[in-house]
Amino acid sequence: MKKFDDVLQSVEASCRERHIPMLGPEKAEFLKQVVQKVQPNVVIECGTAIGYSGLWIAQELQTIGTGKLITIEIDPARASEAQSNFTQAGVDHLVDSRIGDARNVLNDIDVAVDLLLLDNDFQNYFPCFQAIEPQLTNGATIVADNVGIGADSMKDYLDYTRARYKTELHWFEIDLPWVNRDAIEITIYQKPASV
Ligand SMILES: C[S@@+](CC[C@H](N)C(=O)[O-])C[C@H]1O[C@@H](n2cnc3c(N)ncnc32)[C@H](O)[C@@H]1O
Image 1 (tube, rainbow, N blue to C red):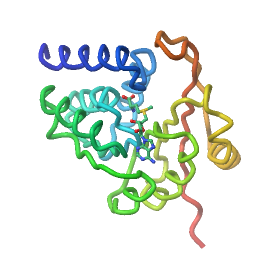
Image 2: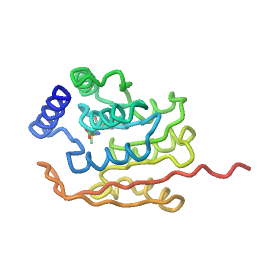
Image 3: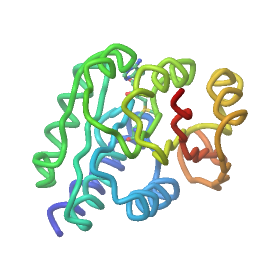
């Protein structure tokens, strides 16, 4: 795992230096535990950046021995850098990187999704959730990042999910150059009863 750990460290350092948003180690450790618990066949991530959280997810999928990550990034330069990081870390076979606006790209996904990570622009959490909802399995887990700092901008998403599903808010003291306290909200999705 030396190669993987070196790449992860270098991606984290690069995000800090260049102020590229990333989960950071505190929230990433929590995300890893979520992946371990869910044991997903398919994880979708909206907002790849340069692959920091994707590396954590892929590492855990490798440990579990099953599942793949589909990650979506609107900025082609960031998506290309992420792809190179996945390759260098030796996890590219577990990752399907897609470039584009997640609100559109999600419409092309026709596989069942067990775990969804919302980590793109806050106002698009709800459109992204709506776009992928038909593919979410009953009991799928949704991880929404930045619910501390971005709650106002994602109010439509939070109001909708909190009114319908079981949700849990988790606060983190974090050590990032741009923020030191933030939250992740976990939602357990339930398919509406068929009529
Ligand atoms: C917070 S960063 C993602 C951090 C990444 N998940 C990590 O922890 O390493 C948000 C990313 O979402 C991308 N983004 C913003 N709007 C998007 C959209 N509508 N579709 C896809 N990606 C988007 C941005 O370019 C940015 O790279």
